[in-house]
Amino acid sequence: MKLLGIGSRIYHSEYGKGVITNVTSQHYWVTFIDNGLETIDLDSEFNIIEAADGDVDTVSFFEVQTSLVQILKKWSDVSEVVPIADKWKGGTMILQPADTSLQNKELPIDTFFHKITMVRDRLRVMEQRINSSNLDEQGKIDLQQYITRIYGSLTTFNVLFKSKSHQFVGQKGK
Image (cartoon, rainbow, N blue to C red; front, side, top):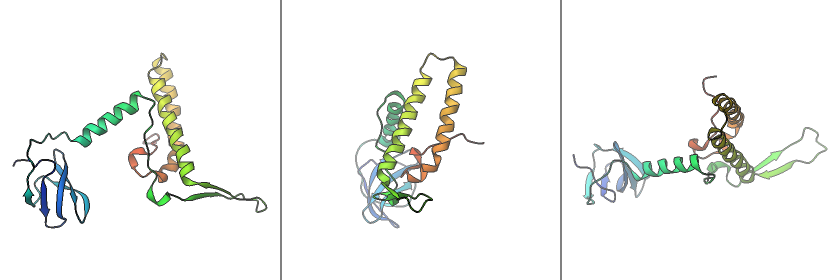
C-alpha cells in the first residue's frame, strides 16, 4: 500500500470529502468539509479524489513540532500560550465571604487562569534550575519532591485547562 501525501483529497463514506493534513505511522489526519478534523486508519476504506505527489515521512510535522516544544520548554524560560477551557472563557469567579455584611469579590476567570499558568511556568523554571544546579543528588531529589507536592496541590485548578497536557500533575500512586 502506497501512502498518500499531505494535500491528497479523498472521499470517505462516513465523513464526506476531505484533505489529508498530516500522516503518522498509523493514521491519516483528514480535515473534512462537513465534519472537521478526524483521524482515520491508513487502511480505512475511502476513495481517492486526487493524490498528492511526494513521499511521506511517517515522522509527522506534528510529532516534530511536539518534540521541539518539549525541548524549548525544558531549556528556556519562554512560556507557552495555554488556552483556558472554552466553558470558562469570559466567566467570572465570585468569592463570597461567610459574613453577609461583607461584599463579594468578583474576578474574571481569565485573569485568575493567567495567574495560575504563571505559577505553573515559574515552578517549571525552578525545577529546571534545581536540576541543573550544583546541588548534590539528594538535595535535588528533596527539592523535587516539594515541587511535586506543590503541583499536586494545584491539581484542583486542572478543570480550567483546555488541554489535559497543560494540567498540573502531582505525585502518582499515593
